[in-house]
Length: 255
Length: 236
Image (cartoon, rainbow over all chains, first blue to last red; front, side, top):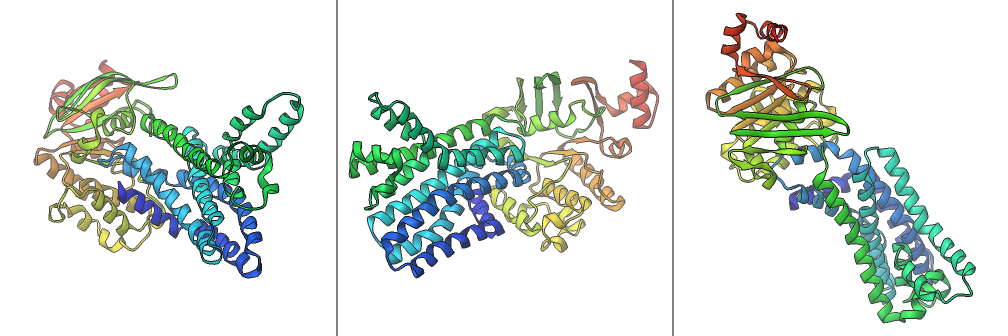
């Protein structure tokens, strides 16, 4: 079981695409700190990068990898291995590959140049987003035979979570401004892992303007400490639930 | 060794296998034949656990295969199309599979096909760069590597050159003599004739023939497998 995750992770790290992804993050992460003299500004720039680039890249790569490894999965399935350990191997291998790239590219410079709680929260968000979007990508891929459709669907999910979600939320709030909907909006916030990740980091900085609407409500309601605890809990749930569905599908499908 | 009880499988609306019952024991070399789309590969995939049955039960050595993957320890499988991860090297593939099968000691490997096909020379090549026949050779060597008691070959001879073909046939006959169970599908009946002693004919998901080769030869009065099959089908 560890063999499988290990071999997938090492296979992935040898992959050109993941190398480009890691290098891109490294150029941005290390470069920003070298150019910008104010680390408070740099962390916000890196936050934007993490929120946009990490979900996109992990989602797309995970989808492509899943389809390209169909032969490999077949080969594993005829060995005396449980299907559950194979899908866990794929999930763990992919996430550890992405997390490692993120840690080297963004995590390491953050810790070296700006070792604060905000940085640690940003690293946490990046790790969670890698896991969550790998999960979402595999969720789509295991339920859909066609590779192109899956990539399209993963892209849609990315656009929805990074751009459209807050827009819809703002519009709804504007429409329903006369009603006491704060609490329901708060609940809706949890439906977007990207907002939760953003809130988690921004709450630790002075830049409340970047919270976005959902984040502002969030902080207003929970305050900082309780807020980050609840945000982390929400992100864990966002990581676990897709995996449960992936596993259920993988155990019962035909190959 | 394998007992298939009342197995049915549907893909969408198409009934691929319809209440199939079969019993196979050691020393048998089964020729699993039938027209395209008759359910041969599905039957094999069901035994391997790649496809899950809608109904019925399969036992391998008296153990229900839905209970766990350990029964696959005694099965070697050579798929119809050998597809491998493209970037992986042949050597890496072998070492990975050997790692997964750590239950078999290093000195117990059956390296005869590995040596006869000269796979050592391919070790440094990536699997994507191998020709179809070479992939089949790799696949065959893997199927026999862990000395399985049950060997399943899906169209094994299709891409092999004549010499490799006869090496594989000899290997199959040797395994049968050692009381292994072999199940082979192929459309090349001449090949099957040299490897098999029992015929199972599938048609539209049902078994229409399940007999020893010698007894079919007697009832049809033919010596060649392809003639036997044709005569049998005409007599039905």
